[in-house]
Amino acid sequence: MTKTTGRALRATILVGESDVWHHKSLYTEIVHRAHQAGLAGASVFRGIEGFGASSLIHTTRLLSLSDDLPVAIVIVDDEAPLRAFLPQLDELLTEGLVILDDCEIIRYTGHDKEPKK
Image (tube, rainbow, N blue to C red; front, side, top):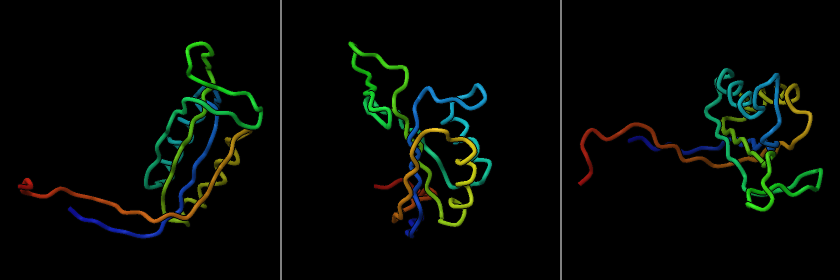
């Protein structure tokens, strides 16, 4: 196992689950473009409750089922490639929020040849 540490940039993109881009989920399009751009990785997290600019609360609670729950796409990479990707978000987003913050990463790669005792 190899452990490396360093600095990176994290982009958190907040959109609605029902947001679409050319008949496809917006979050799916963002993840696929991040992959095509060669970024280190992207993950999508579905919120259980939230509100945004509309001030409407979206929730998974049974009495108020929502079809537009909040979704967060998190992308972490070195600053230069991630900033180079941002113009694609300009093309895709009509509503939403992008949060950029510096972060420290600890990356684990590879496997030990022998099992730990």
